[in-house]
Image (cartoon, rainbow, N blue to C red; front, top):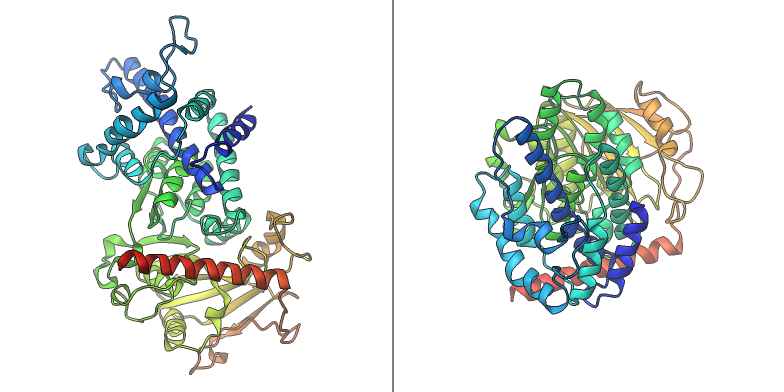
Length: 484
């Protein structure tokens, strides 16, 4: 039922002139879903308060409640078409009354970690893209048919929402930056093994896939009310720069069971590393920071190793943000391991090896990330002790990965199994720290069993990378023009 409803909503959005991409579809579905979720949350809280004999003060006032404007009901509890706004009246209400009211919550909220504050942030960053009030009315009626009441319903909705995010990533352009394959995330979490009480952080949250999967991993381990409260409020933390990604991250975490996600809408790299104190550090870091971007000189001044490469700045941020004894798993492009074209790459590898125990490097095959021809590796490290030995694993799923043949959990099962004991196999080997060149700190993936083989990329992969770089360049030029 839910799946068909989502398909019907997409059909409505495809006919809407203001929505032209998968990103638009997900954005517009997100804000309506959020308000429907909020309405049901309020009902649950009201019932809970009544059972305790206490009054309940609603978050949303009566004039702007879902049941007033989105889904009014008659005396029989049926949808009241006569009372429902539609056409130009509905668009006028949403744009000029509802959104300004919801945006005001940011100023009225008691604290940033409350759902009131999240309401203000979300509606301060998102805009209604419906031009037709008739299309919006259709979408509202479809979403009103969804329910978040039971855990099974939330679970099904979270899977459907994840599918929307995946489709958005597969659509190409800049959609791919929001989606890291979930089998890869789950494998990273199995290796890192977070525990109840750990503070888990992603400074490049995107759609919050790492935090959602970490929640799903830890939820069965929460055996007490205290454990569940810790998971709900003091476990998952993230930062995201882009407005759409921020909104999607909030909605995704809510559907996974976190009522007021600790996601900040901010430029992580705008923070000076010298300002990070012990209280700001985390036990576990899981991330796939954007790569290929170029940061301005004033942003680079926040880091001891100056570089325009976004991913390298993020890696410095993660090392600094990890507490002593903490553990991290970070996706980065594989050229980081060996590049000598700039001093920053060499200096950063040296810093990583000296301040952290880089114990595992997972080499991912081409095609892992849909729409991006760049090959990646995952760095697993613990902070506080220098590296003594690095265990490498070269993932070979035995087939070409692509949109119709994506990465799956079975592909990573051997990696997770062998990594537990750093076992040697046809695809895995270890390198002693003493064998690493002290001048270049070259960490290249060189399987001693296979010899040094240079894998040639397919023409499709090369064209995909060219398209991605063209899009990236266009985005940078647009930012420059906006500043002029």
